[in-house]
Length: 171
Picture 1 (cartoon, rainbow, N blue to C red):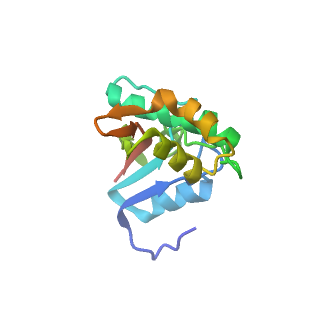
Picture 2 (tube, rainbow, N blue to C red):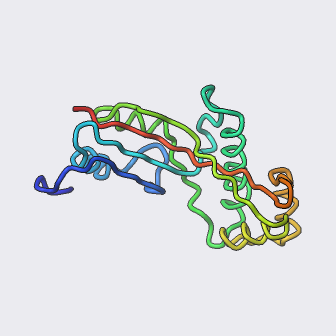
């Protein structure tokens, strides 16, 4: 627990902070509330949870496509084929928003789309294999990734998105 003498912060950004996707550790949730000044902003960001709503109605098709591609790569490739395996836990943003609702109000929830650009499909496949330490042949990985890669002029794009939750500290 943070000491009461610690200064309040106007904003806080957290990424990959849990081992249970349904809630933050109790001590972390308390510390976030204690450290934030009234109207302070907390941003939580993670890979979209496969069981969470992958396409909320207020999100554009582009945002949702990136989120669904990210879910596919993590659920179908990273969790089952990485060495050592990814922990397979994703923040369920709706559950986290509910957990923090005593001290915070929901300000926004969105998918942050950030397409990855590569010179060709082979480079994209090698990058993903290396980044996530995937124990798959390049041919097998390329077949799995083929539906998600898009040719864009002289390059190849891999639509990618992270699930973001923005909460404001209540006064």
